[in-house]
Image (cartoon, rainbow, N blue to C red; front, top):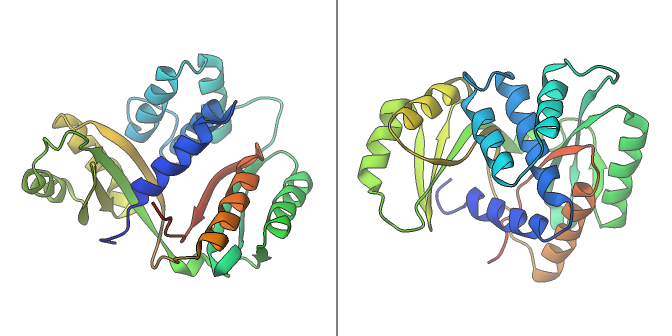
Length: 243
Protein backbone atom coordinates (compact mmCIF):
# COMPACT_ATOMS: atom_id res chain seq x y z
CA UNK A 1 0.00 0.00 0.00
CA UNK A 2 2.97 2.29 0.47
CA UNK A 3 3.35 4.82 -2.31
CA UNK A 4 -0.38 5.16 -2.91
CA UNK A 5 -2.43 7.65 -0.97
CA UNK A 6 -6.12 6.91 -0.61
CA UNK A 7 -6.33 10.07 1.52
CA UNK A 8 -5.00 12.20 -1.34
CA UNK A 9 -7.69 10.81 -3.63
CA UNK A 10 -10.37 11.31 -0.96
CA UNK A 11 -9.37 14.93 -0.41
CA UNK A 12 -9.31 15.64 -4.12
CA UNK A 13 -12.78 14.18 -4.63
CA UNK A 14 -14.24 15.87 -1.55
CA UNK A 15 -12.89 19.25 -2.64
CA UNK A 16 -14.46 18.75 -6.07
CA UNK A 17 -17.76 17.67 -4.52
CA UNK A 18 -17.86 20.58 -2.11
CA UNK A 19 -17.54 22.99 -5.02
CA UNK A 20 -20.90 21.74 -6.26
CA UNK A 21 -24.09 23.06 -4.73
CA UNK A 22 -25.85 20.44 -2.64
CA UNK A 23 -22.95 17.98 -2.55
CA UNK A 24 -21.83 18.69 1.01
CA UNK A 25 -24.88 17.22 2.76
CA UNK A 26 -24.99 14.32 0.30
CA UNK A 27 -21.41 13.40 1.17
CA UNK A 28 -22.14 13.56 4.88
CA UNK A 29 -25.32 11.51 4.42
CA UNK A 30 -23.34 8.76 2.70
CA UNK A 31 -20.62 8.78 5.37
CA UNK A 32 -23.20 8.59 8.17
CA UNK A 33 -25.13 5.80 6.45
CA UNK A 34 -22.03 3.69 5.80
CA UNK A 35 -20.74 4.13 9.36
CA UNK A 36 -24.13 3.26 10.89
CA UNK A 37 -24.57 0.27 8.59
CA UNK A 38 -21.17 -1.12 9.51
CA UNK A 39 -21.15 -0.42 13.22
CA UNK A 40 -24.73 0.27 14.34
CA UNK A 41 -26.58 3.45 15.18
CA UNK A 42 -25.26 4.05 18.71
CA UNK A 43 -22.88 7.03 18.77
CA UNK A 44 -21.48 5.85 22.08
CA UNK A 45 -20.16 2.56 20.71
CA UNK A 46 -19.64 3.39 17.02
CA UNK A 47 -16.60 5.67 16.74
CA UNK A 48 -16.81 5.93 12.96
CA UNK A 49 -20.42 7.09 13.17
CA UNK A 50 -19.54 9.59 15.88
CA UNK A 51 -16.82 11.07 13.67
CA UNK A 52 -19.17 11.26 10.66
CA UNK A 53 -21.89 12.98 12.68
CA UNK A 54 -19.45 15.50 14.15
CA UNK A 55 -18.25 16.43 10.65
CA UNK A 56 -21.84 16.78 9.42
CA UNK A 57 -22.78 19.04 12.31
CA UNK A 58 -19.68 21.16 11.69
CA UNK A 59 -21.09 21.83 8.19
CA UNK A 60 -24.52 22.65 9.71
CA UNK A 61 -26.29 19.54 8.47
CA UNK A 62 -29.75 19.45 10.15
CA UNK A 63 -30.25 16.89 12.90
CA UNK A 64 -33.30 15.51 11.08
CA UNK A 65 -31.12 14.63 8.07
CA UNK A 66 -28.57 12.97 10.31
CA UNK A 67 -31.19 10.93 12.17
CA UNK A 68 -32.91 9.89 8.94
CA UNK A 69 -29.70 8.45 7.49
CA UNK A 70 -28.92 6.56 10.68
CA UNK A 71 -32.43 5.10 10.63
CA UNK A 72 -32.02 4.16 6.95
CA UNK A 73 -28.87 2.24 7.78
CA UNK A 74 -30.33 0.47 10.80
CA UNK A 75 -33.64 -0.39 9.13
CA UNK A 76 -35.79 1.69 11.46
CA UNK A 77 -37.04 4.30 8.98
CA UNK A 78 -40.80 4.10 8.55
CA UNK A 79 -42.54 4.35 5.20
CA UNK A 80 -39.77 3.11 2.92
CA UNK A 81 -37.98 -0.14 2.16
CA UNK A 82 -34.39 0.26 1.05
CA UNK A 83 -32.28 -2.34 -0.70
CA UNK A 84 -28.50 -2.45 -0.92
CA UNK A 85 -27.10 -3.34 -4.34
CA UNK A 86 -23.53 -3.54 -5.59
CA UNK A 87 -22.58 -2.96 -9.22
CA UNK A 88 -19.20 -3.88 -10.68
CA UNK A 89 -17.61 -2.85 -13.94
CA UNK A 90 -14.79 -1.12 -15.74
CA UNK A 91 -14.23 2.53 -16.43
CA UNK A 92 -12.12 4.14 -19.17
CA UNK A 93 -8.65 2.63 -19.47
CA UNK A 94 -9.71 -0.55 -17.67
CA UNK A 95 -10.14 1.01 -14.22
CA UNK A 96 -11.96 -1.38 -11.87
CA UNK A 97 -15.09 0.21 -10.38
CA UNK A 98 -17.42 -0.95 -7.60
CA UNK A 99 -20.59 1.07 -6.91
CA UNK A 100 -22.60 0.57 -3.73
CA UNK A 101 -26.17 1.90 -3.78
CA UNK A 102 -29.09 2.15 -1.39
CA UNK A 103 -32.40 2.38 -3.20
CA UNK A 104 -36.13 2.11 -2.81
CA UNK A 105 -36.46 1.57 -6.58
CA UNK A 106 -33.85 -0.78 -7.99
CA UNK A 107 -35.09 -0.43 -11.59
CA UNK A 108 -34.57 3.35 -11.48
CA UNK A 109 -31.15 2.98 -9.90
CA UNK A 110 -30.01 0.27 -12.30
CA UNK A 111 -30.94 2.49 -15.24
CA UNK A 112 -29.04 5.46 -13.77
CA UNK A 113 -25.90 3.43 -13.08
CA UNK A 114 -26.00 1.73 -16.49
CA UNK A 115 -26.46 5.09 -18.23
CA UNK A 116 -23.53 6.63 -16.32
CA UNK A 117 -21.19 3.81 -17.37
CA UNK A 118 -22.35 3.73 -20.98
CA UNK A 119 -22.21 7.52 -21.48
CA UNK A 120 -18.73 7.84 -20.00
CA UNK A 121 -16.78 5.05 -21.65
CA UNK A 122 -17.34 2.33 -19.06
CA UNK A 123 -18.88 -1.13 -19.05
CA UNK A 124 -20.91 -2.85 -16.35
CA UNK A 125 -19.87 -6.40 -15.53
CA UNK A 126 -21.18 -9.35 -13.58
CA UNK A 127 -20.96 -9.61 -9.80
CA UNK A 128 -17.42 -10.66 -8.93
CA UNK A 129 -15.93 -9.30 -12.14
CA UNK A 130 -13.70 -6.79 -10.30
CA UNK A 131 -14.26 -7.30 -6.56
CA UNK A 132 -11.41 -9.81 -6.40
CA UNK A 133 -9.05 -6.87 -7.06
CA UNK A 134 -9.93 -5.25 -3.70
CA UNK A 135 -9.35 -6.16 -0.05
CA UNK A 136 -11.77 -5.22 2.73
CA UNK A 137 -9.86 -3.23 5.35
CA UNK A 138 -10.34 -0.85 8.22
CA UNK A 139 -9.00 2.54 7.14
CA UNK A 140 -8.08 5.41 9.50
CA UNK A 141 -6.49 8.78 8.80
CA UNK A 142 -4.64 10.96 11.30
CA UNK A 143 -3.95 14.37 9.78
CA UNK A 144 -0.50 15.89 10.21
CA UNK A 145 -0.70 19.11 8.23
CA UNK A 146 1.64 20.93 10.63
CA UNK A 147 4.14 18.07 10.67
CA UNK A 148 4.15 17.98 14.47
CA UNK A 149 3.31 14.29 14.92
CA UNK A 150 6.15 11.84 15.37
CA UNK A 151 6.08 8.91 12.96
CA UNK A 152 7.71 6.44 15.35
CA UNK A 153 5.26 7.28 18.14
CA UNK A 154 2.22 6.96 15.89
CA UNK A 155 3.51 3.69 14.44
CA UNK A 156 4.11 2.20 17.89
CA UNK A 157 0.69 3.34 19.16
CA UNK A 158 -1.09 2.10 16.03
CA UNK A 159 0.53 -1.32 16.17
CA UNK A 160 -0.16 -1.54 19.90
CA UNK A 161 -3.81 -0.78 19.14
CA UNK A 162 -3.97 -3.61 16.60
CA UNK A 163 -3.35 -1.88 13.25
CA UNK A 164 -1.52 -3.93 10.65
CA UNK A 165 0.10 -1.11 8.66
CA UNK A 166 0.92 2.60 9.01
CA UNK A 167 1.67 4.58 5.85
CA UNK A 168 3.07 8.13 6.11
CA UNK A 169 1.67 10.47 3.47
CA UNK A 170 2.04 14.18 2.84
CA UNK A 171 0.15 15.85 5.67
CA UNK A 172 -1.30 12.63 7.10
CA UNK A 173 -0.78 9.10 8.35
CA UNK A 174 -2.92 6.31 6.91
CA UNK A 175 -3.59 3.30 9.11
CA UNK A 176 -4.93 -0.06 7.93
CA UNK A 177 -6.54 -2.77 10.03
CA UNK A 178 -8.37 -6.03 9.61
CA UNK A 179 -12.14 -5.29 9.57
CA UNK A 180 -12.73 -7.12 12.84
CA UNK A 181 -10.05 -5.01 14.59
CA UNK A 182 -11.24 -1.65 13.26
CA UNK A 183 -13.48 -0.50 16.13
CA UNK A 184 -10.91 -1.41 18.79
CA UNK A 185 -8.14 0.47 16.97
CA UNK A 186 -10.33 3.57 16.60
CA UNK A 187 -11.30 3.42 20.28
CA UNK A 188 -7.66 3.06 21.37
CA UNK A 189 -6.50 6.00 19.25
CA UNK A 190 -9.31 8.28 20.44
CA UNK A 191 -8.64 7.36 24.07
CA UNK A 192 -5.01 8.35 23.47
CA UNK A 193 -6.03 11.79 22.20
CA UNK A 194 -5.53 11.27 18.48
CA UNK A 195 -7.89 13.23 16.24
CA UNK A 196 -9.14 11.08 13.39
CA UNK A 197 -9.79 12.82 10.07
CA UNK A 198 -11.39 9.74 8.55
CA UNK A 199 -12.29 6.23 9.70
CA UNK A 200 -14.24 3.51 7.92
CA UNK A 201 -14.24 -0.11 6.84
CA UNK A 202 -13.79 0.05 3.09
CA UNK A 203 -12.36 -1.61 0.00
CA UNK A 204 -8.67 -1.05 -0.76
CA UNK A 205 -7.33 -1.81 -4.26
CA UNK A 206 -4.61 -4.44 -4.46
CA UNK A 207 -3.07 -2.56 -7.37
CA UNK A 208 -3.58 0.88 -8.88
CA UNK A 209 -4.18 1.83 -12.50
CA UNK A 210 -2.46 4.89 -13.94
CA UNK A 211 -4.12 6.48 -16.97
CA UNK A 212 -3.32 9.05 -19.58
CA UNK A 213 -4.66 12.55 -18.90
CA UNK A 214 -7.40 11.96 -21.47
CA UNK A 215 -8.59 8.68 -19.94
CA UNK A 216 -8.34 10.05 -16.40
CA UNK A 217 -10.56 12.99 -17.40
CA UNK A 218 -13.10 10.49 -18.78
CA UNK A 219 -12.91 8.48 -15.57
CA UNK A 220 -13.58 11.59 -13.50
CA UNK A 221 -16.68 12.28 -15.60
CA UNK A 222 -17.90 8.75 -14.87
CA UNK A 223 -17.39 9.26 -11.13
CA UNK A 224 -19.19 12.62 -11.30
CA UNK A 225 -22.11 11.03 -13.14
CA UNK A 226 -22.40 8.26 -10.56
CA UNK A 227 -22.19 10.73 -7.68
CA UNK A 228 -25.06 12.69 -9.19
CA UNK A 229 -27.34 9.77 -8.32
CA UNK A 230 -28.79 10.20 -4.84
CA UNK A 231 -28.91 6.40 -4.53
CA UNK A 232 -25.15 5.94 -4.85
CA UNK A 233 -23.61 5.54 -1.40
CA UNK A 234 -20.00 4.76 -2.23
CA UNK A 235 -17.70 4.32 -5.21
CA UNK A 236 -14.51 2.26 -5.10
CA UNK A 237 -11.97 2.25 -7.90
CA UNK A 238 -8.30 1.50 -8.49
CA UNK A 239 -7.41 4.70 -10.36
CA UNK A 240 -4.22 6.35 -9.15
CA UNK A 241 -5.21 9.98 -9.57
CA UNK A 242 -2.60 12.47 -10.77
CA UNK A 243 -1.73 15.57 -8.77
